[in-house]
Length: 573
Image (cartoon, rainbow, N blue to C red; front, side):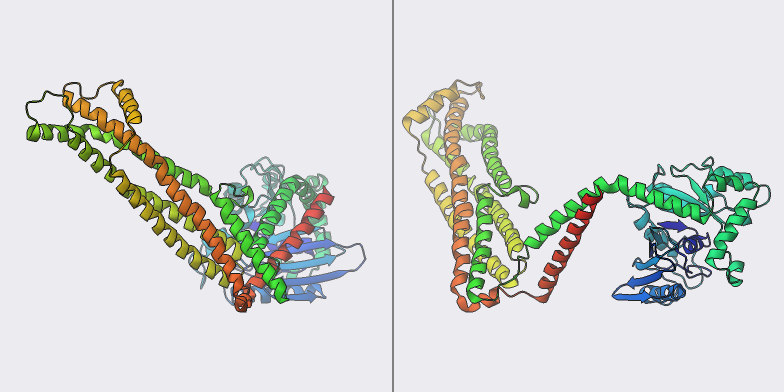
C-alpha cells in the first residue's frame, strides 16, 4: 500500500514502477484505491493491460489509455467531483519492463477541506488508508518528499500507529533535486536509517517532475535521467552505490521484500484459507445440493431433510449434539443449570423458616395454648405450616417449566433455520409446528405440576422414613434453644419439608424432561413427517427462490477458489 501526503510524489513513484501515466493534478487526484498488478513477461516489446471495477472490465491495448480509463473509473465510482470511495479499481499490466509486484495507490492525506470538498474529507481519507495499511499481510510504502521534516509527516505517523515496530514499513524519499543546498547530509542520514528508524529502512528516488511531463519526457528517459542525477551528485552517489537510490533499485528491493513477506506469511495464510474453506463448506451444507427433478427423488430428498432435522433435535435433547454444529453454550447445559437452580432454591428456602416459625408458634401459643407444658407440638399447626410453605413452591416450579420450554423452543427454531434456510415453506411449517407443540406440551406439563402440588397438599410420609429423618434432624445443633415449643416445631417442619422437597427436586425435572424434551421431540418428528403425506404440496415445500440458488452457486464458487488457493499454497510450501 502506497501512502503519502498530497503532492508527495506517490503517483510519480507508481508511474516509474508501472511504466504508465497516472492521473495528475492539484488537490485530491486519487479518489479510489487503485490496485496495480504488475506482471513481468519475458517476451520483448509486450504490453497488455486490463482495468476492472464494479461490473465493468476492459482490456487495454496501449499504455496511453490508462490515465483516461482511471479518471473514468473514479468518476463512475466516486462521482464527478471531489468525493472519495472505498471501492477498488484494479489495473493489471503485463509488460517486459515491469517488476512482479502488486501495489495499491491510496488517496493523498488531506489536512483541510478545499472548495466543495466535504468538511471531514481528511478523516474520510484516513479511515480509507487505515483499512488497508492495518492488514498484517500488507507492506506499507510511505512516500515523503526530501524537502520536508520526515518526523512530522502524517503518512509516517499513520504507518507507525498500525506497525509500531516498522516491520511492514518502507520509507521512500522523493524530490531529492528540491533539497536545499547544505542539507543533503540530513537526507543521507534519513536513508541510512539514522533519523527515524524503520526496520525495512528507506529508499530514495527521483521521478518525473511537472516540467519533465510538459517537455514530454518519457518514463524510460526519466529512468536514465535519474541515474545520471545520482551518479553526478556528490552526496547521493554513495546511496546509489549502496543500492538505496533509483527506481530500478526500488523495484528490485520491493520484489525481494514481497517474496520474503509472502514466505513469512505462508503459514498464517494456509491457516486462514483452511478456516475459510471449512466455514464456507459448513455454510453450503445449509443450502443442500439442490432439489432433484424427478418426483420420487423429490420425496426422498424431503424425507432426508426432515430426518436430519429431527435427528438433530433428538441429539440436542439427549445431550449428544455433534461438537461441529454447536453454537455457544450447549442446550443440555442450560437445562441442567435450570434443574440445579431449582434444587438450590429448595435447599435455600428452608432457611427462611427460622423467623417465620418463631412468629407462627408464638402466635399459636398466645391463642390456643392451655395448661400443657412447652415442647408439645400441635399437629394442626404443623400441618398448616408445611402446607403453606409447600404451596409457595408451585409458582417457581411452573416458572422453571416456562424457562425450559422457551430454551427448547428457541433451540428447535435455530435448528430449523439451519436445516431449512433454503426452503422457506418447509421452514415456515416447521416453525408453526414448533410453536404449536411447545404450547401443547407446556400446558400438559403444567397440569401435571399443578396436580403434583395438590397431591403434596396431603401431608404424608412413611412412618419409618419420617422417624429416621426426624431422629437425624434432632441430632443436629438446636436453632431455638430458649423456647422448647419453637425447637420441637422446627424439628418437625424441617424434617417434613426436607422429605417433600426431596420428592419435588426430582419430580419437577422428571415432568419437564418428559414433556418438553421427550414428548416435544417425538411429536415434532411425527408432525414433520406428516408433511410428506401431503403429496400435492411437495413442490411447494421444496420451492427455492433465485436468491437461494445464487447464494449456493456463490458459495460453491468460493469453495472452488479456496481449494485452488489451498493447492497453490501447499505446492509453494
